Image (cartoon, rainbow, N blue to C red; front, top):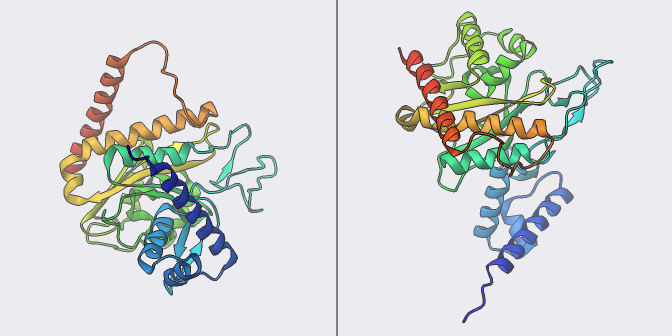
Length: 313
């Protein structure tokens, strides 16, 4: 019988990725895939695959020259406790969306696991987006397999002039009047023919997003693509991040209710786990059994369907 060496291969691959991260840390100006492969003794094809994986997972990014640059934070981003009394945030400015409120537990791996779970359920590219400043939203984590279509124009950040076109940032705009005022202070650009450019209409849509707990964009950010997102709010209510997915507009039209139900369910579970201060919640909830869970899932899909149908009308 042959010995199973898959575990050893996985450890070897993990060690190689750690070497690549250390290498990027030693070269803040970035390295090309060929340079990384040469230093690690790997073929150019393997190096390119490694770079693609690191960038896709949010540990690194490509600069304008195409060089791989180490990210400034882990994919789920740094979190700091905001000073509510002084009104100071982690960056020395006003308390921002990335700051934890008094008594908030750090999210740990809860948010990263939520992105993974959403991708596992839907097999669509899943994202975690949060504000890192008054005007900038950061794509903190991404999951998606090779060959899965990428949302055009979406890199590591969403600039304010494009925030009105994505479901992810619509969730954040609905949660923060400060962010909304900053984004709508300038004329809203028509990213596609479907983009909402009227501030009054956008404001009305964001009020609906705040009430229903999810947002949708259908070819508003990029032609041929749509996004769905739901908020994950910290226990104190002072910080909100957006969990969502992107897919082709054709798939969104055909499977909107199922996809939205998964987005909303995973976001709610993540918020509950964050509030519990745990990274995992393997214990079943007391009381209702599996039949209750199935009924709850059907209810989420039904409500989502009513909202989507109303929008189509």
